[in-house]
Image (cartoon, rainbow, N blue to C red; front, side, top):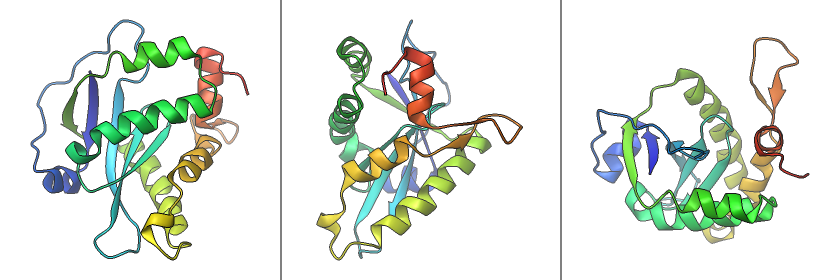
Length: 174
């Protein structure tokens, strides 16, 4: 099971109410907690839902406006993203076997919200570079975010990209 921490606007758009309890991850589960938010694309009526993994800041982007409408797409895009970055097949299978459903919760980390705001600023700008909504390359947006450094500590040296996080966490090859 996954926990999707959603900002209020996405909860409203999805017509969902947030659960009051938070579950613990299954033994050995890495991809348990995600934050979700809508992205503006500069195309009228066209939105993206951005899912960001806590704590790695791995980003998955789906076309759509609701959690329910993007859930299946999210799972497929997550699997393809992990494959593109050569995550071990057994890791991918183990993680995806534990995500048959999700629980929606309110956001509860100000640092995650701040990180997401920075990611959103960059992704929304990238979306303006295209002439048509269907031309937005979601794989490119996700791949770009894998190398994006974010602060992990209090000093100027404490920066890591999502790819660096996974190299440290599971020994992901570069």
